[in-house]
Amino acid sequence: MGKGQIEAFSDGVIAIIITIMVLELRPPEGDDWRAIFDLWPVFLSYVLSFVNVGIYWSNHHHMLSRVTRVDGRILWLNLHLLFWLSLMPFATAVMGEGAFSRFGVALYGADLFLCSAAYSLLVRAFRALHGPESDFAHADGRDVKCVGSALGYAVGFGLSFRSPALGLAVYAGVTAM
Figure (cartoon, helix red, strand yellow):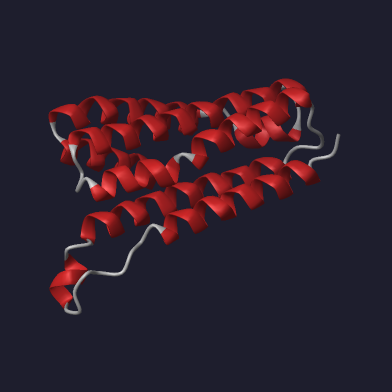
């Protein structure tokens, strides 16, 4: 099976995810700068999520540029990734509307971890399908970033119960890697 359909479908889903996130940005209640400033948790949550979804979109395209075919397992693992990404608008809204509460930051981190784990499974499946000597395997390397991201998100998740600011700082740091 070719890779064009999985790429087009994933692009569409990711575009919808970003659209849903931006539609969650509501205009301020008042008509002054203070009313806009009061929305900073919601806006900051959106920015962090937009960057994360953008990174997955970019990495997904890079990955698909290196592969030659997909199979049924790849299709299901790609849907698995898209499922966790599709929860990003919900996790973003909970975190932003809750002004970075422990629960909101932990929920967001759990979603980031699950996105990272799903992406890692997808990469491994592509590696298995194309073989260790394939262009994909050579371009992908040892997958240190996937493992490091998942570990970072797990640490941030744990820290978010102690201090939401620490959890958020870890998520932002992992995103910036």
